[in-house]
Length: 339
Image (cartoon, rainbow, N blue to C red):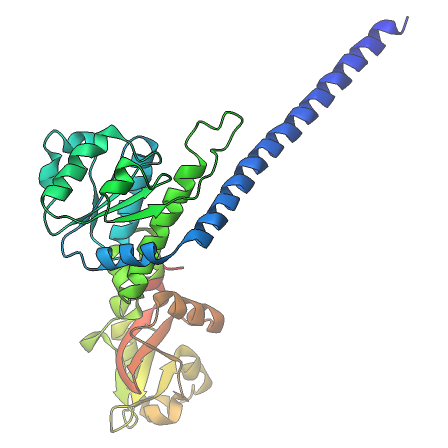
């Protein structure tokens, strides 16, 4: 009587076992791919020599653009390398090698350098752009696994990828090779911007939008200046200080010495602590809290947000040395996407 239920249970157990084995096989396959590509990257790093330095010399001397080109999967990697170069201060442009043969060679000038990618080095579509470069004495850097190939022979500098099998049982799909190309492109881009002393300010200029732009926004970009800054001298009376606080809506007023240095701040808390019949006639210097928190104009806005959050305040005076040059408000930072 129990044979049918037992058979069903056995079948379900077998299915569960097969599913678990399949999952383990999938994970093992994925891990093999990553280990194989990681190993190739280590061997690539160890193989770098003076050719990389020569490539950096050529690219650093370019007065036009770095023309990055490649076909198929190498072309996709080339597009990314061009974008990375451009975003790190090296003007670059992807040119499709097949389209180059039909007019896009006009994008390439004698002031440029060509960075060509081909795993085999025998990509037929590269022939016209390489021939054009040779004709006009445009330097060529080749990235290939076969330095003796047509690309390797035509290039002024050949960056040879260490011989590595593509990932997977068949070893046919461009995987390991394109990973090495991509990483080598990153190495060139980072090497160039470190040579040039590319700064955070330069980076922000090229990345004004998105999260990177928000991270790199400076206090000076967001602060209020001039007549907007709420200030009063130490001898100013509190009745005037209250009018300034109300008109300029920062919830505080900075107190300056005769020499213009920021020596204190009057906040709502200070008003409550000194509340009394003589408050309006009191001097700002007698009511203020000495040594207020300040920040520099070139500090990251994210730093200003951190300070204001930690101290539970909503505004910070911006100083040059000890002289107030502006005021930044938490609301302005958050509105700009800085968090």
